[in-house]
Image (cartoon, rainbow, N blue to C red; front, side):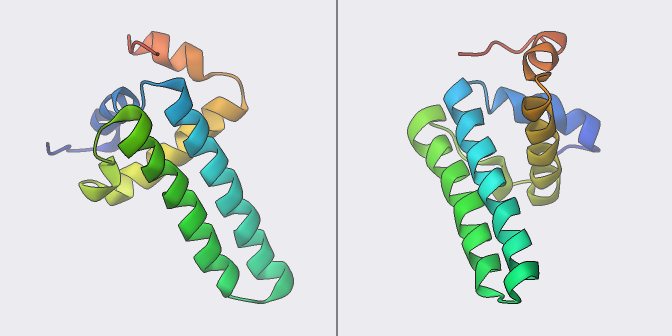
Length: 109
């Protein structure tokens, strides 16, 4: 699928993350990635960046392959997927994810 813009991609992305466990793994992975990015700045060691990438993508991809049973959108739309991951992260952290799923009429399991 090709998307002309992020607004078109966003509902698709959420549909590919319909299971709460998938979203939880993404949230954990993004949280770990952010911690490792801060670690790069605090400890001045780029190895933490590798840890961040591995933990962020590792947990997200695990959830797609074993929980959601679909192919990560990152493989097809890397930039939009990264943007959507942070948007989903903020919505989860702020307690607004359920409202967004309802607004877009996406069933959550």
